[in-house]
Amino acid sequence: MKFAAIDVGSNAVRLLLAKVEEESVRPVYEKVSLFRMPIRLGEDAFPHKKISEEKIQQLVKTMIGFKYLMDAFEPADYMACATSAMREASNNREIVDLIHRESSIDLSIISGKREAEIIYYNHVERLAENKNNLCHMYVDVGGGSTEILVFDDNKIMESRSFDIGSIRIHEGLVTRRDWEDMKLWVKNVSSRYHPISAVGSGGNINFLFSISKTKEGTPLEYGKLKKMHAYIRSFPIEQRISELGIRPDRADVIVPAAKIYLSVMKWSGITEMFVPQMGLADGIIHVLYNKHKQTFV
Image (cartoon, rainbow, N blue to C red; front, side):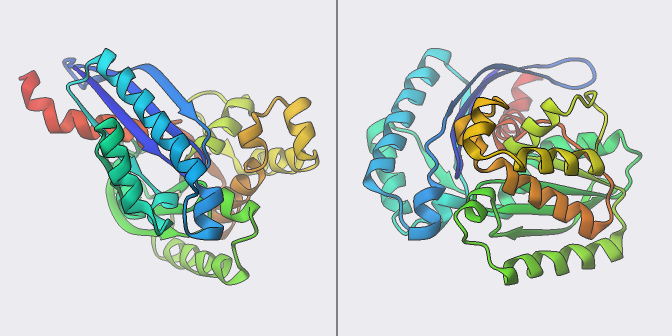
């Protein structure tokens, strides 16, 4: 069965086309194509609380293009979700209505908690099953927010969404009080649940993991991540692009993103982070499969 997922994020907009095949033990998920447009809605939404006409038009054109791709792919179902930037934009409802009129795509603006749950329930709990059901801390860093969940024995024990993201930090919109709020919460839940490792989600940690030469399925060590952060930070943004080969729309936000992961690991006392390299779009595919799986029987 084929499904499509659209993730309207703060830094980029993504379309994932996937197939799910029913096997004897568990379903097999195959990514057919992934399309990404670096529109960066957060540049408008976070400082100005409104998305500009220019970015609205970019988004609408992208969604029209995605609709054509979905029509060609013919999925059994799709889901389109918008996160932090659209949550914060005062003109979000008119954008949702415009997208529907122009592309017929129904876009839902989801909460930070729901965003984290979509990924957790469909990916992280499977990872936890392979870690003897011990306590873990899930950290998803986006452009506008960071979602943190503590899960123990495959159950969410605590969850919180913080308005601290890579774009917000880059734009100078995160205050000392914001950092202190996150620090106190992480320290508090860590003292009560004692998570043994972290699970990292988000485009920047996926990229950092891919260049870390860490073997797939092996955790990324705190010390290695700290060294990578310091190394990349030592280069001006232009040189990160020209010498390190980092994509222009990632070069300015990768250092702030790494700072968030490192801070959470430091405050919690966690020394390793698993990076399953799955995000919201992957989680949406699993949600759609669970919705339709009775048709496989």
